[in-house]
Image (tube, rainbow over all chains, first blue to last red; front, side, top):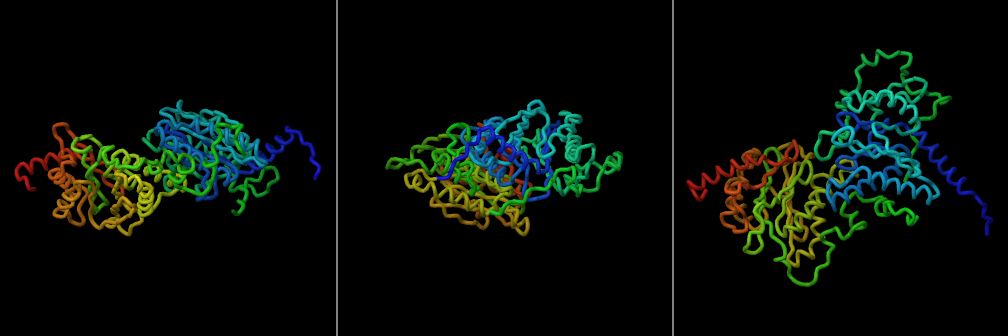
Length: 265
Length: 278
């Protein structure tokens, strides 16, 4: 029989957390913020088929970063939980908080029971009848649940993004202003005030519309997204030196923002 | 991996990959919520629940129109005067039911969640044919209960976004209790008054009707059904109760404004007062 080496629980947890954190930090970022018209979810996503932003229920949206198959698994579970609850009670009995708590329990269980934690960070967003009623929960790989009213960012450069968001966020701002802020945050992920230009083909945008009855989730794509993009004149006001034409190629001081390739299943 | 230390953890059935169907998921996670999964003692239970009656559906130039009367009966007794039996199944389709009212409404509620669930999980809705077949599958689970007198028959119609032209986009599917699904050519009706409603539509239906004319024809057909079938309710101006009429077109499924239907129904009553044979 092979000799069992003793590893302290602290060490095991630290290793798992380190592993998850490292892999999540390689992903592109997602921003969720509430505004006058609803809750806006914006992700930087090169794929148009594999989404990062989804509908869970009538007034509840879902956003995620990290490993696709893992957050897809969580999303499906969330849709099932919401639909089952809405079916057996009433549509109004499905709320963001109970979904977020179930996710927290699930992620926590996976983190401590399984050898490999989920390499994901997810957001459960609920739109209320006014911006004060909006609920934004951020859940991390270990099952921690953070109630972050107003705005939140996830991904490798979340801290830089939150800085930009905290300066410009106004929950009474119209959708277009909120989108401009989200774009500003997502494009500043290099830090040091350096901005890259984001085009519509790498953006995934959806909104939980406050005024829409029933299913409030709507994707903003194609022409609707073009119309929402800040005009080029507004872009020209910025210092042109600060706007980089493309993603920096050398990974000297910027972390690799490339999505991890998916294992074939 | 038991999750014992985490009572709030989502159970295994929630996390398994594979199905986009809500009813298949229910079979794993909460089988008691499926209508067909309730064992009944031997016997005939036809008199246990109210019976919902006549539904008509017509193809139009713009899509489809479906209408249902407001009566539910329990033997010779009127169980409800204001029951609603026609519902939007999703954004582009309609579903109505006849037969055991309680089971029928449960089936439709489950079906609505089924379509929405698929759309959310897959990111795209089912095709119209797929929706009809899904309804047939769900109906098959009900066969045992149908044989004990608790039969439900739905009628499904919708606007097919994949059709080559708008004129061909309206489609109607009828079903039988064993889960057979049949695409109808022009119009169809189900329920106890369906023979009379079909007779009425046979004389009034024309291909390429506008939605407005189809609504009128549907209201007339329900009037004719109520005229000869005691289980079908006619327009009730005393209580201000008129048929539920819905349409599914390129703009989506919607209920025809109640005031419009009320005006049409009053016009039918006025015309029949002049000439009772229509």
